[in-house]
Length: 369
Image 1 (cartoon, one colour):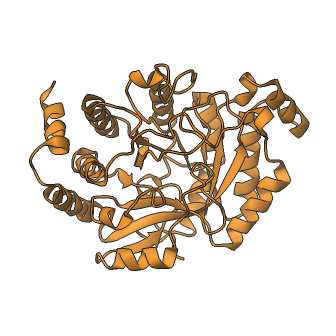
Image 2: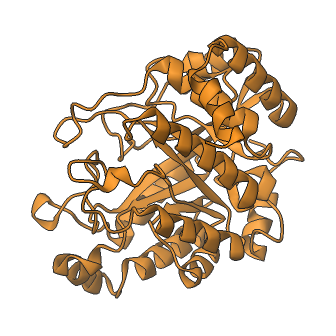
């Protein structure tokens, strides 16, 4: 084990108190991001629930027999218009990774919509949303080639791809990514590298709790921290706690404890590249208030109108109550775009998206309204 891994091991499992770690992380957060915690007001657009993978914890994906479908164009625009009317800035496209490569039914549905691939349909949908609403598209389409990123970048300021874990053990039988074809970490790192080469801001992160050993957790934290220092496209790290869901293979799997989760957040904040935002999902925490002074500066997307389609049994927090809780820590809850201020620059965004963003942001890079 190298020296840095030993430091991480000590921070996660050593004798330094959790509060001491949190205090240090919060000090860094205040220095780098000030006294604000941001969130992105968004609408979920589940473009398709079909996927060529089926992870052991997932309830979003459905096979054709289970009702997996694509939204049509009218549905996409109807959801977007509701989001626009509700003051959202982000249209979050959630979808499976190229389901037409596995399911004939998916290919047939795409043909009926007038497209040959999920990617082409996503690009077209993003174009419609960008050009006909005030929203900014952001998508999590899975693995992306350089060419695909070039096309997505035309109509979206940012995208996302979770690493989830660097461990190879989660591909074993009965584990989280058994029989998946797109979740191999080398393929995911290749996509993140493609994003950097194409200068496409991306969000990535870990799903904490899908591994089983201390060594795997330490390795995940070590590698995600190193990734923030080497890949300049990364604008945000999501530290998402696994929540067991009924009707999944991992329904009885243990969830990470709050104390260890807090130590993870603090460790990542202390050692990651300073400009990188750190997020915990606000609807998955058993006690979100514990995390408001942990080193995070963001609470991710929160929708006033749509469910969290990936975690539908976990409701969004009430924004008025959340704002009060944040203010109780002498911080302020503010809105942001799906692209962070760190990447609202001409070398990261095309001209039309850069202009659209600049028309609504203040000098700090956050929306004026």
